[in-house]
Length: 443
Image (cartoon, rainbow, N blue to C red; front, side):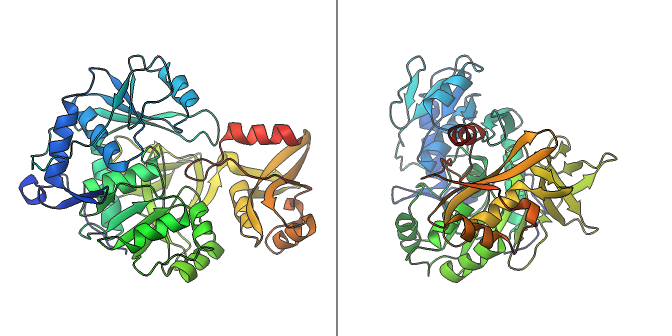
């Protein structure tokens, strides 16, 4: 799937693109010219406000609203969760914001705009945009604390999409992007909305969740389907009995794959998964196929470098300025890199270091563990203990035995707590506040 293309600075020529397929919406083909006709009709009906919470669950409706709002100079707010308490909290920072989605939300005090597809058969020309104006503000997931706002322009997404699909060899491929991630999350937003918008890839409007639903969409796809998903979903799919003969590719993100899960995915689904790496702040900027390479490969024209303090700087055409990254990297001479984990993720016990995310991957790789995570408990300033929380029928001895071949003795959990479920969000992450609530009930 790997190839390199120099990113173009121009958008699709409308006369050539208007008849091309753009999306599959409720089983109906939407051409690019239909898209722009629908965008125009929705834009003319929007309230005259500065901000809009884009809570559309349907991916095509989400895209229509985003583009319509941008054409009106409105900024889309993408909360890390659709929970009304989260939306209400964010709304205090953005006066004048209104809500837009398919169904009336239970949130008094905020105006609601119902979003429906006009269903136009008309072919229209692309709408003009101020490409360098902030078009949306996405919020980090809250897995490391309070969600942080990250503003982006349409130019950022256009150039980033060209870099990504070019580096992955997808620029001219007509594939149906079947995504299990919501469009409000940066990974879902990039791969299932902006990649199709700026390439020949085709949007699928659903977000299938259960293995049977994902298999159905893949099996009935009118174009070769590529699955855009997460390690959490892949664990479920490898244990399902779905049909994956039509599948032509798998993308994974939000957490790093283990070799074990990558191999299980290949055996069960018939495709070696590709991973993409990035963040809400930077968008994606690197990829790898774990079964063939352990190092990450930056997209073409992207460079990582380290400053005198050892911090990693990202330089890319899609960013207005170099970005300081929060993770720790080992950068090779050829530009490829190994990921060591986020600085806050690194722990030290008995003079030895480890990454919590790596410990979590080892824990979840154990056969019989449905889900789990490690946390570090500090009894006294100089004494830290690792404790595991699991959803499993395995006894504690079996869990420790499953970890022993991979972990130093000091990183084996002192205690193991059992719970019925871990409240992960839509992309498989555990928010810090939810983790704290779990721990409060255990300790």
